[in-house]
Picture (cartoon, each protein chain N blue to C red):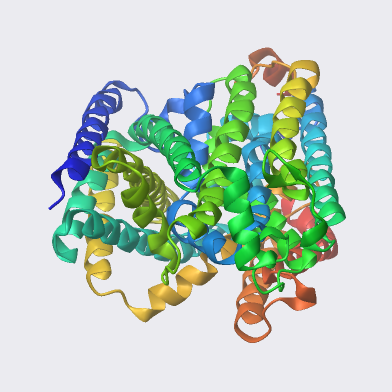
Length: 479
Length: 98
């Protein structure tokens, strides 16, 4: 085992652990358990808000598969990934103050809470809870497996042991600390991700003999690598641009992201949050993918894209430093799964149990239930990660686009369009998710774009049409 | 209950709506900058590329400079147009409604 590399990683886990314990104290002190556990008491400042947004969004793909794709495709893939700069400001600006004000009025703690108060429909609640449970659970399992694999490759332990280490370190602070622990550890891990990116960028430029030399090497190998069109010149402008929807503006509809837009303390934290998250997400996305491209002349001939970044770190950095840098993808995975875990748990406890099974449950009971459900979910995920079922892997492919197609209009139009009603929301969710799965399975890339674009357009038409058509009926029922 | 919750008279909603529109404006500017430089300068033969700081010019302007410009633009827009408002419920306003 490579102790010099493992030591910084262990140290990192211990710090994260300690923060979880410390934040857990707030949960005990706070008056409203639900607000505190699932939303951190709506008290996030600008820096923590920005970091928890960026790290929840930045996952295994930003640090492992993304740079791997850039390694194979060249600068065209970096171009594609820079569309993610938009996520840094778009979510907070679009949901913005309206979302914060309205959710406070509703006393909403989750996205489903918000949809429930806005549309007052059982079906909206059930459909949205179902989408969250299915898509996010499978997304979480996929990341969980990634976390186990990463520890395995770093420590040389068996996959099962690695999975166990990963699970314990995530579960403890999520179960005890809730949202606040997650947000604060996200801030620490965000700093780790930022620093790791910077160190690795400098190291790879030095190892490659400077930027001009690296670019010259790339152009000599295949001139397409330095064009916007990808290694085989098959990345069309339409396809690359459509990622502005999938990983740019569409992110506004991911429940784990949107819930953060109701968690900040005041409008000043939001203003600061927008600036900081744009800087951090832009810096990490631009440079991590650039690192992937620059790695090509330095360590040529890598077959599996996901291994580019760990191999590069071990090649160009001294052992102890590569341990610190590799804590970055670790942090990226942990920060994503912790938020997903809490969100799935809040959907079960808050949105399903408290709404339909026992609305009068006492605070104490809700508290124990929340922690137990979170723990139980964790165990189910661990068991599934030991031997991942194909269904989970299949569903995970649809997770991001599926959630965006389901939620973008019920959330955004629900906030800004008075006439939007429950019929619109239901139609939009069914047509959005349905068309997305159909397109992805049978007719990928309609009009040369990622299928999420077409599905979001279809979902929009469904939302507006159904809302207007059923408007009379809606009014009659209300009166 | 519903009518009160979603009332559009709340003065804060005007501010919030305007800021959301600004967000859409910024993302459009961002996209045009990104697309224009990338495909405007990047579509020619790689042998004819010019370089800035060692990077192909299209990439430098679109991705590197584009990122810096967006951060500055956002900072400026927030300083100039974003207004600090309370987010919690306004008691007197609510009472009037009832």
